[in-house]
Amino acid sequence: MSRVAIVGAGWAGLAAAVAAVEAGHAVSVFEMAPQPGGRARSLAAEGVAGGDPADRLDNGQHILIGAYTATLGLMRRVGVDPETVLRRQPLALLDQDGAGLRLRAGSPLLEFGRAVWAMRHWRLSERLALSSAALGWLLRGFRCDAGWTVAQLTAGLPARVRAEMLDPLCVAALNTPAPEASAQVFLRVLHDALFSGPGASDLLIPRRPLAELLPEPAWRWLQQHGATLHTGRRVRTLEPEPEPAPGGGWRVDGEVFDQVVLACPPAEAARLTRAVAPGWAAQAEAFGFEPIITGYVQAPGARLAAPMVALAEGPQAPAQFAFDHGALGLRAGRFAFVVSGAAPWVERGLEATGQALLTQARAVLRDLGDGAGNAVRLERLVAEKRATFRCVPGLARPPAQIAPGLRAAADWVEGPYPATLEGAVRSAAA
Image (cartoon, rainbow, N blue to C red; front, top):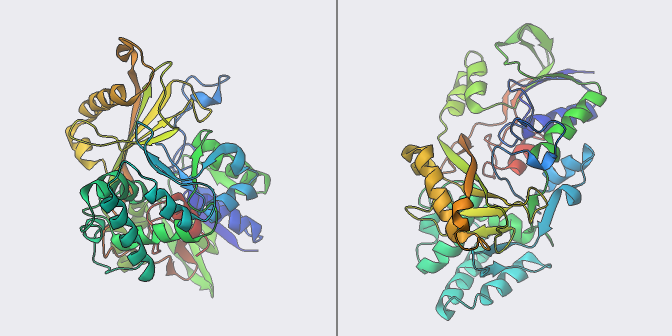
């Protein structure tokens, strides 16, 4: 039996810990935050003790897609039924009037083609342009010049096609605006959504707090299976054993382990490896990051045209998407407005962002009634300033393997996916 240390209890760390326990290893998990979950967690539940769990807010509105098979499989392994905690629906990219792309159940590729031609508010030339571009991507194996941005990939398409479909899909998937986002990674996401079988492109929207999707069930599962779990503990030192075994040997704060998995933010991983793998640490330190801002809005009695709607962003309209928590089985009258690629709004300040979100909310929410717009209020504004790495062309992400017995598991290690929950979970199997 090997002794394995997992540094970090985000989704990658939890996946690595579960896999190590299943392999028969003695596992210790070190998490510096008060609770597991990393960048996809529920916030501290102030005032929720003994109350309705639906009152718990998350650090941001997350969604999954049906192609996230590793994540869904991990949830099942720790006792979570994805069909219970996630609302599954065919991909729909609808605006506040309910118009837009709407797939049905069935083959995602065929449904995408049908749905594009059903966009009756688009001109014939616009539908034909997108269909032709998609066919070209298919014939080229969803590959392009590694140096292209999404804006370059889609430059020949009509402005409305880019503004209403491709740019929102890009920022939702990569959290990087189209002018800077990697076209090759964007095409990989499209490929997996369209070619991974029926249901692969389905949207899976949480209808429970994020903590209940994986962090808390996985933590309980690890406890029940004998893992040693630490929260509120930041690892200070990582040193190789003076005479390691052939497979490795490391000291974590002086405690000896056969293997160590770094499932922490890149800055933490770089700090811990600077003395033992300086080249790898330099790569981990070189990331740029993109923020995400989520505004939770209270509007009693209001609704959206769909559980998730795409919004037209602009100088006074920060959010690209809004979610109706009441329609998702969470708190009725609560809405999450999501600002991806939010660097310009972080620079403008959270107060200005909050005021702009309120203005945007009043414009898109339905059934407010006369004068009811005054009742719309901002419940909480959550800014994750390092929500994801900037997914730009040519980004050199560090490999998972660092040294014998030492590797990294995180959505930012080398791999084909952007910073997603699926990328994090899959990295644990590297």
